[in-house]
Amino acid sequence: MKSFFTRQTEPFVYHKNYLLLQKRWAEKMKRVTDGLSKTKLIWGLLFFTVLTSGYLIYNLYRTFYKEAEVSTASKIKTINLKN
Image (cartoon, rainbow, N blue to C red; front, top):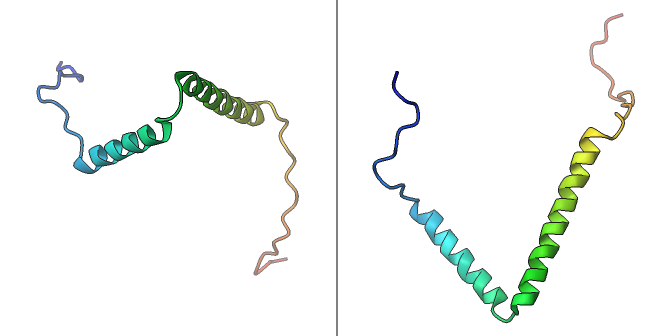
């Protein structure tokens, strides 16, 4: 049986638009963070991590542990109601 996962023989080539976008994003982030000290960058990273982690935990809690809300009856009237 032939293996499903074969070693890639030629290197993967990214699309030129992807590489251009990646380069522009890196340059923009470099300009934005040029004046910040290492301490401020670390605090910014920690703040971003805590903020996004808190949002993820909140969404997980809301999804799994909140009691199922009772849906209200629909106020839409049906057409061609047969009695």
